[in-house]
Length: 293
Image (cartoon, rainbow, N blue to C red):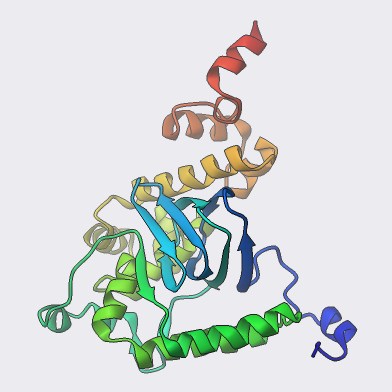
């Protein structure tokens, strides 16, 4: 049975026609490869096949049918389909909250950690799809295949997903799954992860959180283990590198989208953080030198 009144749904402002909807079902052919630069946290369900993921820090994970992967925002990932695969992707535009009465921070509490939880710093979180989630996914994927792309529907289904995770997985399992983003102040760390790209300077980020520069600086180092400007520069460099090598965008557009006031500033940043000019990153230094001759 198809969706009734399809033209009305297609013309609704809540119909998600974006290239990356909040929930997406994708089929990937064996041998396909690509690069992901995540601006939001993603949960990926592998319902068919086998896919290899490698993060920018060289850590890797091979997901197979029946597994769930948690991919945190702020990193680049390369992937390769090792078999014909089908995945369902959930994109989280806001901080993840399992339910109204259970924030992720509760998984990090020292009391819980001393009761047998494993402290991890892995780039990937993994879970097995249980019977409840298979049932949930079957219904969801069927509706999406029939053209359901309503943003309100996606919000409801994401809330349902989180409630299923909260209800049918142990806190130990959820701790390990979400461990890449857990801290003793997940609200702070997730705000930074999801919002830092909207600001040019550390002071602007601090002001947006109603903190002094010193307060923000000290909390940032305690959680991320790096100076905030260095962390932001590394994150911006990863995004820029991915856009240069995996898109055909003009350098002026990439510079503008990443907050650079001029081509000169953009080129100087690339040389400092990537070791090459934008042209050398895209085409290779040797080819650029040959074209100059």
